[in-house]
Amino acid sequence: MACYVRKDICYSLRNFFPDNIENIFIEIMLPKTKPFCVGIFYRPPNQYSFLDDITTGFSKLSQETRDFFILGDMNINILINGKMIFENNKNSLSSNAPLSTILIKYKEFCSLFNLRQLIKSATRITSNSSSLIDHILTNAEDKISGSGIIDTSLSDHQLIFCTRKIIKTKCYTHKDIQCRSFKIIPVINSMNY
Image (cartoon, rainbow, N blue to C red; front, side):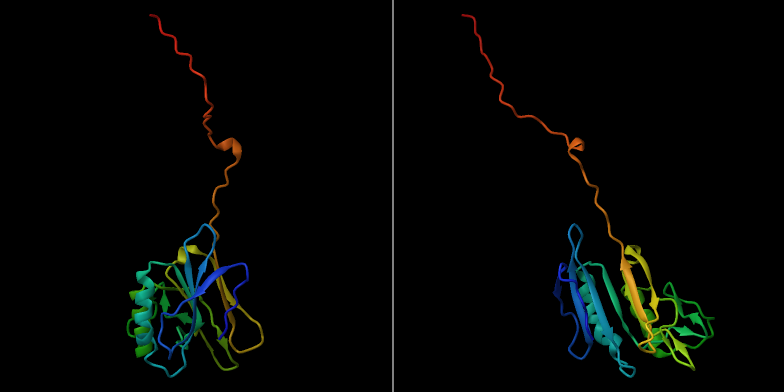
């Protein structure tokens, strides 16, 4: 697992999660914006305690009331028969469709931390199957301008991405600024006796 941060961006590594969780978590500090966190996770396919293990870290993270963006190979398929299971964190399959324990826990985890999953199409494609196991989760969906997948042909996993909106601040020119003059004006005091 690796994370590249451009050298002109201020960041700090953060540690919210236990050592048995493979992750990189950074806080990014951009000019004129509140800091936000970006995390990258890998969940091994048979690590069933993963969601329980990261819940404490997410509790700490949400207490700081920051926007966060989580990317990674969660190895939890949320695409069954070509349909998203959790469209806007709701079960989009019929009510009688059985969900595995990990899918139920994942839905509860996302609801608990108000997380939205941004990727909507298959991220792992083989000759026999396709699944959506690489996810981007965020608590700040309104700050995302785009997300999706890119076929790199380097692996059976697609590259996932999201772009964060840049909030432009209004630039004031000199003519917009009201100035007050503090010139000293001599006062002549005349008194009649």
